[in-house]
Length: 66
Image 1 (tube, rainbow, N blue to C red):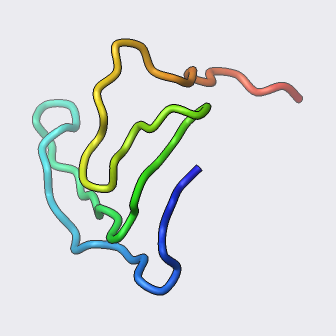
Image 2 (cartoon, rainbow, N blue to C red):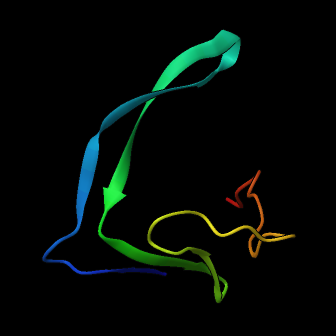
């Protein structure tokens, strides 16, 4: 679940960050005015940064059923 105000939600300016193989740059755009993100009832983002958890509340999907 994502909590936001539809009147103020937006996308930030592009930012170049290192992170691709061999030090290649990548471009990200951070969300503006997101108030929180929850996965399976556990808050994972507080509106300004990710919240650290010993074990994440979700799971990585590697395959999809047909």
